[in-house]
Image (cartoon, rainbow, N blue to C red; front, side, top):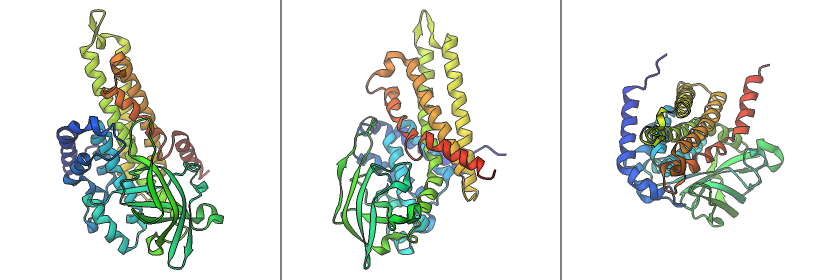
Amino acid sequence: MDYNLSPEQQALQQRVRKLAQEKLAPLAHEADEMDELHPGVTKALAQEGLFKYMVPKEYGGNGISVINVCIIREELSKVCGQADSTFAMQGLGSYSITLAGSEDLKRRYLPKVATGEAIAAFALTEPQAGSDVGSLQTTATLDGDHYVINGTKRYISQCGFASFYTTFLKTDPGAGTKGISAIVVDKGTPGLDTSKKVKLLAPHVNGEVLYRNVRVPKSQLLGAPGGGMRIALSTLDVFRTTVAAAVLGMAEAAYAAALKRAKERKAFGQPLADFQATQFKLAEMVTGIEAARHLIFWAAWLKDSGTAQVIQQASMAKLFATEMAQRVVDEALQIHGAAGLEKGSIIEKLYREVRQPRVYEGSTEILKIVIAREILKDK
C-alpha cells in the first residue's frame, strides 16, 4: 500500500498552500465574517484555476478526482473558511449536471463553472426536509414544454449570488422518493426569489430560495423524471468525503495554534507544554488528526479507483473527522484559555466554524444510521 501522494498531487498541495498563505490569508479575517461572497476570494480561486478541479476535462476542467478535491479543501480550510465553501459549492452545485445533464446543459454550464464565471448552488434542504429528503415539498408540475415550480428551499449556500440552482423537487408527489427529480433553475427566472438571508453561527453565504410559479423549460431536467434521489445520493457519495477533508484542515490549524501556545505560554514558572495534562491533550489531538486523514484518503482513493459506491467509507470518514475536529478545536481553546475566547482570534473563529459540518451533508446521527445499514444489509 502506497500512502504517498503522487508528485502531481504534492505539487497541487504546495500550490494551494502557497495561494492560501499569500493571497487568501490577508482576506480571511474579513471574508470569514461576511454573509456575502468576497470578490477577492472568488477571484483568487478562479485565477489559480481551482474551480477546474470540479469539472471534467472535456468541458474545460482538469477532471474530477476526490483526492485532489480533498487536498484543496484541506489546505483552504486551514486559512479561509469562505474560500473552502466557495470552492466546494462549485462542485456540489454542478456535479449533478456532470452526472445526469444533457450534452446541451453540460456545455452551457460546466465551462463557466470551471472559470468561475458561473457560481453554482445545490438546492436540496427545505424548512421541513433536511436529512429526510423524501419529505421535501417543493413541486414541479409539467405544463406543456415547461415545469412550473413551487416551494421553498432553506439553508442554501451561495443563495443570492449563484448563477443557477440545481433544485431537487417532486415531479410525482405521490411516489415518495421515486417521485423526486432534479431541475436546473437560472438566476433571474421570474418567480425565483433569493433575497432572504439566513444568518448562521459562523457567517456563511446562505439563504432561503423561494419558487413561486417558476416556469422552467423541461430541457432543464437532469436525467429522467424520478431520478433525483439517485442524483442527490451520488453527488453526496463524492463530496461527503471532502467535507471530512475540510474539517481535517480546521483541526490541523487548531492543533498548530495549540502547540505553539503550549510552548510559549508559561504558568507556574514553566511552559504549558511541560505539564502532563497539556501533553495528553496534544497527543490525543494529533492521533485523532492522523486517524481521520487515513479514513479520508482511503475513501477518496476508493472512489477515484472506480468503486461504484463508497457510502460506508465516506460516511465513516465524515462521521469520525467532524467529531474529531470538534474535540480538537475545543481542546485547543482550552489550552489557549481566555485568549481563545477573544473575538477575532483563530481559535474563536474555528470554534464557530467547526460546529456546522456535523450537521450538513449528513448529520452525525444520520451517518451512524447509514453506516449501520451498510454493514447489516447483507445479513
